[in-house]
Length: 123
Length: 407
Image 1 (cartoon, chains in turn blue, orange):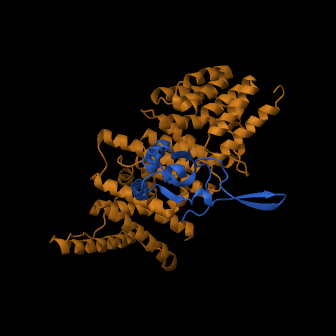
Image 2: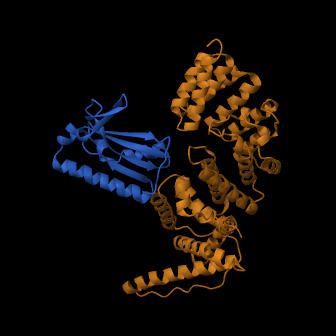
Image 3: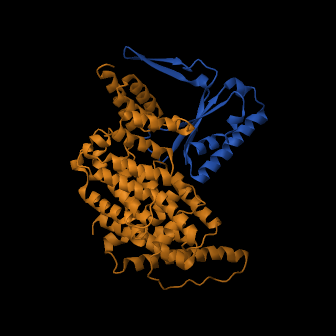
């Protein structure tokens, strides 16, 4: 079963962390990625640039209009994701619990099953 | 010989060759790699130079050579560290079929179901890692890691290449059947854009089930599982429209069910029910046979279907079985009786939010004339399912209740 584990970050929360704490998060993700690769459960993972770098595209009367993002008026933004293929939802939840973000107040780790997939998987 | 012919021959020989090697040399992991290389060599050489007189012997020889090369280079590496004796590799090839032993090994309890499935398809089914990856829609590297991890686990568990004895053998056979059932279901679940690969998985599961049945013709559950697969597969053409929309059982065009598969399946059901034991696959195949026996949906013997679900519920209690029994009960005693049985599932936390419970309740509410309730449950079921085809179907049913008179 495929699941998307999305990481919802709050830039203010990240900024308030010490350098050591930020480094520990980075190292934690590295360990997590290696474990997922070895078990054959990782399909892919991506991290996104800061939400301040987002461009919001709208088309009005056929004309595209681009404004500086982000689109959502929110404290939390999509920071990145893990796309995994594992046994069941319980396993996906267990894996999500190993992501360092899950242990930090103000950062969100969300698990949702994938309903449709297409495109080249041989990355 | 056609490309398909080569492929079928190689797939059939792969587990036999692997079985022979593992029985001889142990080292499942190394043997598996060596056999894959030999199969690859055959794929290249046979179409150009013709199939050798003894294709199995050819594969065993080539695979053994690869394995010996591997052992020698491993040994040379170890030799640099410590002095050990060179292992003598026997040359003769025993003519036994160890496919079953191999299948039992791939379904080792130390592995997750996903790993058992992948390893079975590769070692026994003779599929390449790339093919398995495509069938499960994951990158090849992901599948390669999964298979490699599975082989390591088996090695670490210290398994011997022999059939387990007594109760353990019985237990392992259940796992084997479950893995084959999972492979079949994966192939049977319609999923957008991937039908082709998935149909291959259903074929593969049937082929493997036939193989097990040939080795254990007396086992009622093996026969039952094969029958269940054949009877289900017989309906594949009528399960979806050309646009990919689901067609429920009562609306399927029964003229297009595969008669040859049904006849074979019915024969197997009869055979399995004549035995001394009765298990879940036998009962499920008997239910599928009852549906296959009905020339039209109206002629379905729902009393028999209900009775079979009742026995199934007793020997293998499971909320999904109760759910299916409620459908049969609604057919014999009316939708209110079916709905009453469904309420017994509401206490089950996992079932309460399950899309199957919501959709069955929606169907039964629709039959009682409660279109508002049916609409509500169809919508909730559509939100709860992870299948696009099913979601489209449920949304369409929901819209239909809105158009019905009195809605």
